Image 1 (cartoon, rainbow, N blue to C red):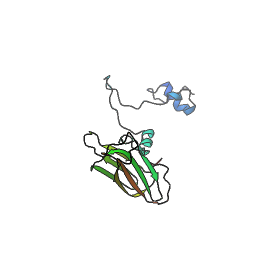
Image 2 (image 1 turned 135 degrees about the vertical axis):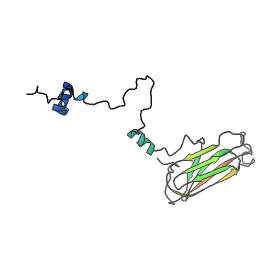
Image 3 (image 1 turned 135 degrees about the horizontal axis):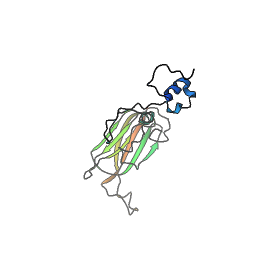
Image 4 (image 1 turned 30 degrees about the vertical axis):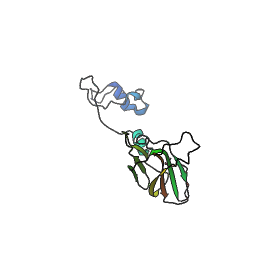
Length: 179
């Protein structure tokens, strides 16, 4: 009785076996059907469709907190105080073209230096914790401070100090960026 067909002559014996025995079929590995578009006869590659894989969607939702593609200032120091966190960026030319933009969870510092084609930038898309405000000041080094240092900075360079006021004073910041 297993040899009797149901009258559907265009089905293959392979598909018949899979339909009868399901996952226990010897041919179950062949059950998957290609569901792509019809071939147009051209050898050139073509864009089929844009779908987001689970890997893409999870990596885009987990964006890096230190935006290294936007930041070209990578050498800085920070200190964690009770009420604020301070960032220290050394060897910055004195300029009045400094822009500090922030939200409660992010920070972007842009410095336009004369005679440089690319602005200097320090960007954190996600800070360690929330901040209520941010400010900066330029501190020029005095020549007398570096009198013993033969490699003293020229007077046109300064240290930029960015102060981030914590929303939750007393909370420890082990890093500026979120993990």
